[in-house]
Amino acid sequence: MRDNLGFIDSLRETREPLVEIVLQPGTRTIVVQDPALIHQMLKALGPSLDKGRLYDKLGQLLGDSVVTATGRNHVRKRRQLQPAFAHTEISRYVDLMRAEVTATVAAWERGRSLDVREAMVGLSLDMLAKTVFAGSLDDAVFRRLRSDLSVVMNGVGARMMLPDWAERLPLPFNRRFDRARAGVRTTINTAVDDLQASGHDTGDMLSMLLRAIDEETGEPLTGHQISSEIFTLAVAGTETTASVLSWTLYELARNPSVEARVLAELDEVLGERPVAFDDVIRLPYLNWVITETLRLHHPGWLVTRRTTEETRLGTWTLPAGTELAYCQHALHRDPARFPDPLTFDPNRWNDATQTLPPGAFLPFGDGKHKCMGDRLALTEMVTALATMLRSVRLELAEGRVVRQVARLTVRPRALRMTVRPRTRPRAGVGL
Image 1 (tube, rainbow, N blue to C red):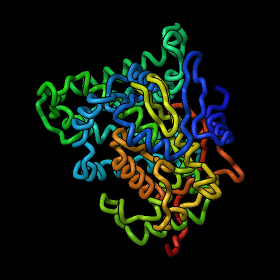
Image 2 (image 1 turned 180 degrees about the vertical axis):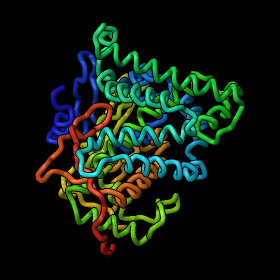
Image 3 (image 1 turned 120 degrees about the vertical axis):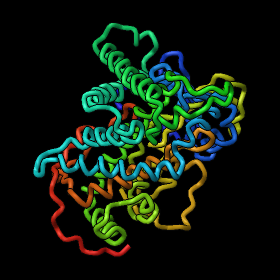
Image 4 (image 1 turned 180 degrees about the horizontal axis):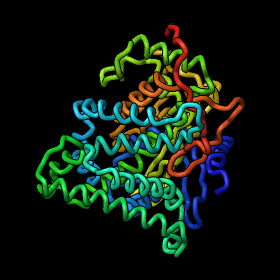
């Protein structure tokens, strides 16, 4: 409880492929540390595994969604949502994302300290609102949604780790969380009802979900189903994007040569025009920077699965009901696969011949439960960084080292930086 990341990292010192731990009294969990076994667990065994207790809890807290569903239910939900993450849909979102980033950066007061993580959470929520609701929420409703989502995001990680009985205690933490969760539900349900009543197609993700058909019943999704999907997307998607953007800005401030190469690439590829969807794949160095951030500061710290029957994993036979887990944060810092693992080095992704064993690098998971929003997330991050970095420079106090803390995601603790105008000439730096 005092240092969950340090504890998970320390398991590597056992040099064992499987290590049994106790997350809670009466709950035995096998932490899988060998990439080959993780690959087997996610790919070959994927169809026969449930998602495990942590996802059960997430479903209780946020509702049944594609993130928490398993088996046939997961396949059906994934098919329903897939059109929202298609290439054509994401390309339409970029202009909306860029406008939100531009407005956010313009509001930052130059020369003043900025809470970077809170700013990135706000920005991620703004981008989400535009892509999901097409700006149909008025300012007062959106501010309330923003506030409620912030409470839920800050509390859901702790609630996932608590036993069910602890959630019922009349504590201020529980009351705040429950009020905020109900507020988010109400806001989303009202937006769904209003759009259904209008009969309009606003071209956003909400309209797409209203058109989706349940392949088993042949009926449209219910308002509760749509609300659960959007609620989970809002919490999981916003939190992870905000964490990765925060860590990227932190590492760029600590590594001026890396920042200079990013700026040179932006000058070369974009010139004076704004970033567009087609530029996402035309900015290789910026993509390496994001990839390296996902390696060194991956937002996921514990991913779980559960056996539904007696299961063979490697040379081990596991009984039904065994909780399995792996930690992307620890996996991506393994010196056996990543030399000098604590050094931020985007160039490690430049070598096209570099081959990592399957299961060694899992920025978006793998197998049938691989994150279906990976392309959307990368597009958001490239758009945000390409827009921010050409307008401002975020300055870190000399010698400042920011601690990491694991809640729902691995996030920076107290990341404050000073906003400076981007005025210095950007000399070309070759890639």
